[in-house]
Length: 241
Image (cartoon, rainbow, N blue to C red; front, side, top):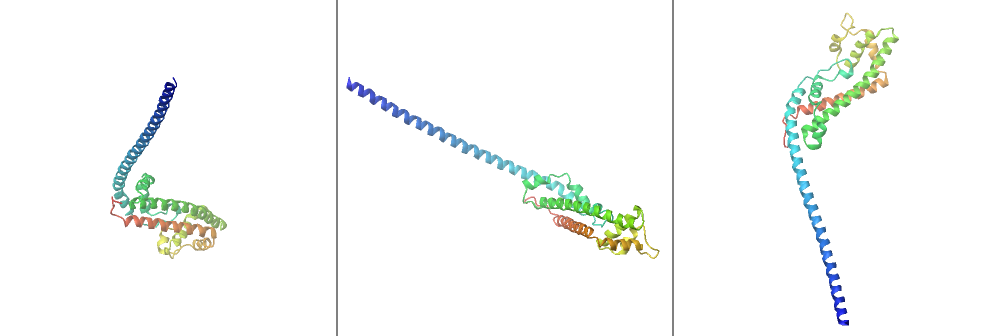
């Protein structure tokens, strides 16, 4: 009886040991399977992302190529200096480029094609254009107030303001009088600007706030022209960028 009991105990112990080994191996197999599945799944996912990324890049490059000639044509417009309201003084080349790029998904292109020079140039132009608009609006606000104050001090109505604005901006752009005078409504019989216009421009030059606004406007205009010239100097679109 004792021998039978000992035999049964041995069988139970052996069975328990076998079950423990079995479950350990089962758990290890399940874990290994999960890890293998995870690795395979991630590998497939990354491969799909790479394929999708390459597809996006190819499409973006085709899209850029399809609009680049239009941008170059726009950049070929003249750089005429337009006097008057600083907000409207951007040259025709800038206005034409802005019309050509205003609806383009430039932010998306920069994300998909971060090294593409053509996209970088478009983005740089947009930034320069926004800066020019902001600086010009600030200058216009200060200039219109200053000109109205000057003309009001001499008893002149607002109809006189435009000529003084044009003369002041023309001199700010470095233009000689003979290029400004044909645009003015007030000039002497000898072909010179009216004395009050010259005196007004001299007084405006002493206005520190106006001088600061003009400086920001001129710097923004220079940056805008630099951006336009960089587009002009990059006529051959490289689809491998």
